[in-house]
Length: 290
Ligand code: SF4
Image 1 (tube, rainbow, N blue to C red):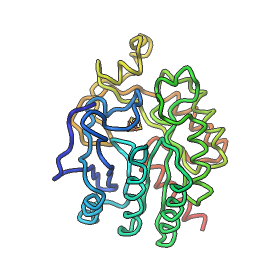
Image 2: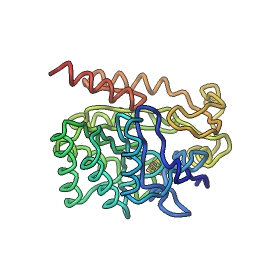
Image 3: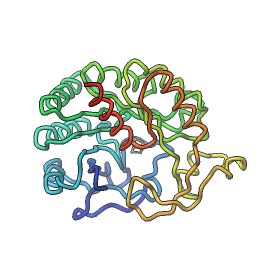
Image 4: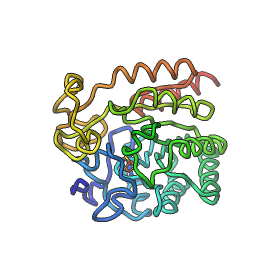
């Protein structure tokens, strides 16, 4: 993992519209309970600070004028075991103490007790007329690419079932088919969307970021980068969703983007490459349909 960690004075990422917070690295050796091959925290993405839940709430309260939505997302899966209860405690305290829209992202599954807590969180957001976006990430479907999301990450079907339960509980559901990866057949993404079509409100994609010669590159392309991909890679770019200062290579996924966008259009589901855009468009549609 990247050894860099944000300081407790500047623990999380605020971009003027959203506050990105998390439980921070799992321990000194692992930033996350999961080990996705494409996870940019393995390279130069700087981990968030480790703060207690109450300190995260204090940070959010102290910076309330600087954001319109809180994301519990970013550098780690705050809901994966062994931290599921703490992650849900964070969500619960946010909805009880901060009058704001909320989005959380995970690849995990939940127990019945967890769903009970999630229902209270969703209901509280409804009561205060704030949005609750429940985002589940699924990056591949085929077994041949299971190495990208190694165990104990739940299977794609298990994660689709999480989306279904969260939809039944009243959340606005987001399927993040991200990042788009050149080693995953585009049909995988279309299949995931087809299987989840009855329980998703928004689909998100994302470009693939990696550091040349870094861990992400080695794990995603164990046999090296195919020569024919090089012309679709843009070199030395800054990340659009974080303030780390590294130079990233970005694979231009426009072909995948167009295919997924068309699929979503066919199904009448909103699609965006950036979550800010997806959330804004969704809100606009909700308001105009009232
Ligand atoms: S679940 Fe998210 S934070 Fe954790 S390893 Fe995968 S991509 Fe990284």
